Amino acid sequence: MIILKSLRRFSDLKLKLSPHQLYITQGKGTERPFMGDHWWVKDTGTYYCIVCEQKLFPSHYKFFPDTGRCHFFASEDGATRLSGDNPKDQEVQCSGCGSHLGHFHPEGPAPTHVQYVIESGSLSFKEKPWFTVPPTRRALKQPRREAKALLKKQKEAEREEQRLKAVEENKLIKQKAHEELLKQHEENRKNKEQKKKQDNQGDQKNQNNEEEEANKPKSE
Image (cartoon, rainbow, N blue to C red):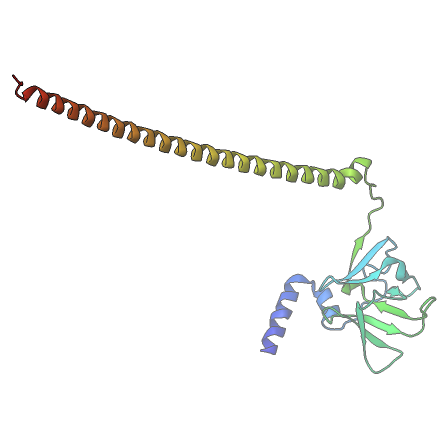
């Protein structure tokens, strides 16, 4: 399984890197002096691992002895690791992917008095822009305006929610009042019908009494 993963990784690197870069980083190769792409570069920027793109060396850590190679007096914290038993000539590897970068020597310039001799084929360089446009006053105030707009939107949403809630409550109150009014009308109608029925019964009773009086024999 480990062999298959290694073969797959090597195949991916063959597609990503040039033969020269593959030879340097995976075969621990050495470039010919003055033939690399970065040894003479004095631009401001940052050097990255060509394999995993981990940040390795800022350009202000670089110095230029007449060797035709990239020399740095320090690296980013935790970006590299050393391998080898000879303290005067150790291999420098990328801590992210383990690729070969170059060699470490304990003699170097101030302030560290050590030097990293790095192969150009193991590095990629990203130049820092010459000038970054400072933000305008409007841009500086933009977060505050956005916060105010968001707060205003939230308050409007709360007011709209309260308005809808009040409308719903008024609707329920009106519906309840309407139901009570209908109930009262129904009770009044029933009372009227009952009263009318009682009146009809009273009229019928009076009419029967009158007929009985009329049918009684008259006394001589």
